[in-house]
Image (tube, helix red, strand yellow):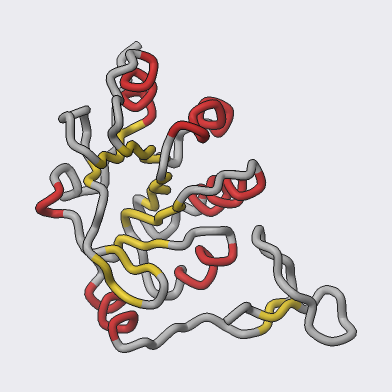
Length: 181
């Protein structure tokens, strides 16, 4: 069996990785997504390559992360969570929502590192991504970048269903949740 890596288009080197949107503003990207272990200090690797790097004890003091592709199984990822700093959940196209489930499972499993959305990250998905635990976004879409740069957050302040993160109840209806500011 040959392991294949799904790497977001144009994300194989650090020079092509966009800034990361976190905590309300864009910051320089501190991790590079790579299709193979290039020996860099902060790399996000596909599951098969990450597992080989960690099992071969070649990680050293490097900060490593996982590129969690839609087809990856959570059961294969779970044993690695204590050894990585970031999980980049891949959203290869708008219609593929498996990344939402992956992020929610990471939160419920107790992963405390950064959960980052990569791939086709659009402005209207960001509020939903936040509700399942994603806290950082590699945004390539020009419209989404423009909206985020201007502080135009499309997130609603009230939700009728609980998300993966704890949310304070709003008023007397236990199913109504208020977004934390």
